[in-house]
Length: 233
Image: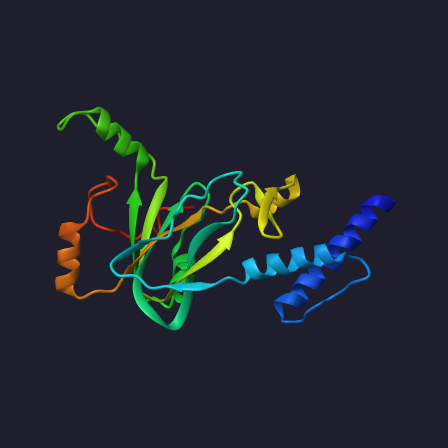
């Protein structure tokens, strides 16, 4: 690297180390490399990054809230934090089978990560669903390729956490969001596993009542849940 690149690298390294110390409770009133306003900007970033609020809910809670792209303001997101002593709930996770190698070993690891008692798998065949919509009942239906799978982890333990982040295409700078660089975008790219919603564990009667009241938001392939351990390479 040239002199300018070396200076930028050293500055970023010092900045990351200072923020790490601030996360650990070490305050800095001054620094030989950064101005007072730059230190204040770091403190604001740390305050936002440390924001962690437990969400109390009943029934269903949708974690998959779409963030606004290229938005300059801080946005809220929700996540499931596994905790062996946490609340008991059912966790529904959707996998993109084009991007994720879903097998029994991986599912078992996720079950243990969520402190869940068991899991169920449902294949979602998008191509078959599209074909079914085009053809009337009794019409010819073509068998499509399975591209998604829904996994429900039964009686998982943990809490729903609310955090503050910048939306897609943006990075945190103080208490605002600025456009990311190409390198930063690559680091922030999402994987194919998406946590969709968490449903609090209920008794049989409450579950039946909730099922009657709930609205169907997605069409699914008919059939019982099945293991997909031997269907993927």
